[in-house]
Image (cartoon, rainbow, N blue to C red; front, side, top):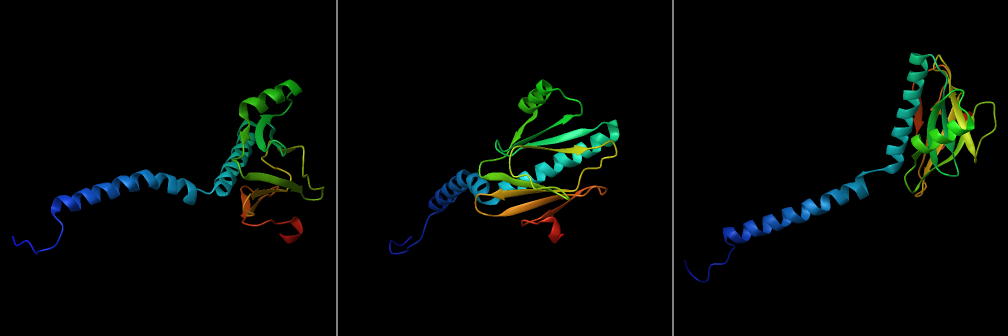
Length: 169
């Protein structure tokens, strides 16, 4: 082979491909977690799942269930009817779900009642799965907002990718 011929050997190309593969395998999970995972959307999905679970349990077990929110501590948990204060604290400690950092519940609005912007709030699911019409407002630290609307007699929830008041529905 003449000395003036320029190019890369197969071994050099294989080393470059292997190094690129290693770099990609190390950075891809971080890229996915940082860019593709959206805490606001995943928190919204988890909360909707809990709402649907409590509604179904209330109907199947013919029991009243509660979903509690603590807006200052940024968490929620569930429990049955008739809990003592001690039982409620125990449920809170054992079953509380904390919202991810950067996500918060700004307020919970009720149809024909005042908006709650702080403290502890509860939603009651009766034996038929009914819940008072309400809207749960979630916000990310980047300013994006979601609204989860619970309808009294209809199963499921409505989701809006913005802050919605009852007057706007």
